Length: 232
Image 1 (cartoon, rainbow, N blue to C red):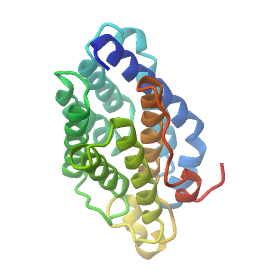
Image 2 (cartoon, rainbow, N blue to C red):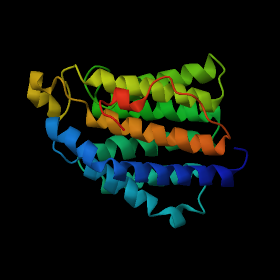
Image 3 (cartoon, rainbow, N blue to C red):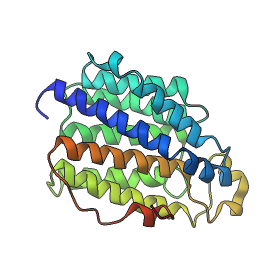
Image 4 (cartoon, rainbow, N blue to C red):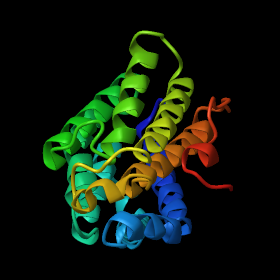
């Protein structure tokens, strides 16, 4: 994407796609959160990203990094519980990596900054049964695919989504160590983490948007329905 106008449109379309997907998945995320949390993750995510998507016209004259920053601000204002700072605050922090535009290199920097801030704010590491279990493999895979394997961004992102899917599956058989789910102790085993799941949904929509703007379609190594434990 060579010009800022195209980049801005891509960000706005990605936002629309994410908001629509999370609205569609609201009940599913609520069901997951009902088992080990407060049963509000689906509603929180739908509300936050829905409010951000409603601001498309307001964002239409901003630079791409400013759009991303303001999406984060909107999430903080509209997403309840721990998800607001985790998603919104981390997006705001990482948006500075896009000041010189969106490229393969700056997207890697954004992903790393976002992950670092999520881990810092939430205090979670891999294996704690949180969104980090999907984020870490996704970000690490994306970084390696771009910087070490020299893959095109679209293919790298597809591999990152596959890694996130496996991360979601990983949360099912482990015990929660952070958040409300940790209060259940061993009763949390056998339940899929809703935060990791919504993270996967967001990444899937980013990939779908990237396919539209980067003129391509890539094969996926894993299927979402296998990782998230349901049939589509």
